[in-house]
Length: 58
Image 1 (cartoon, one colour):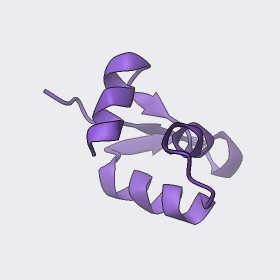
Image 2 (spheres, helix red, strand yellow):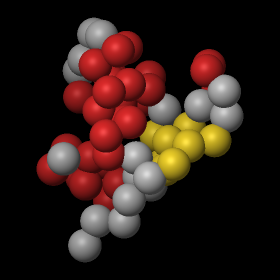
Image 3 (cartoon, one colour):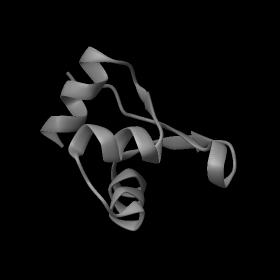
Image 4 (tube, one colour):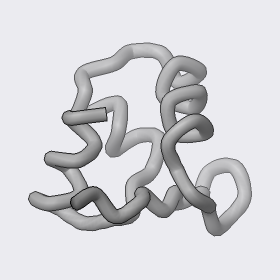
């Protein structure tokens, strides 16, 4: 959660699965997907072009 807060502040409040894996140095797409589904407040796009909206961290 803290890492996503840092990402949100440094880069922006939208993230893709690939960007999350790169930022957290994860190998598993499924692990990244579970994290994003638990944290994200919504998403746009389908499958390969999906972009997740991160919550505003204060």
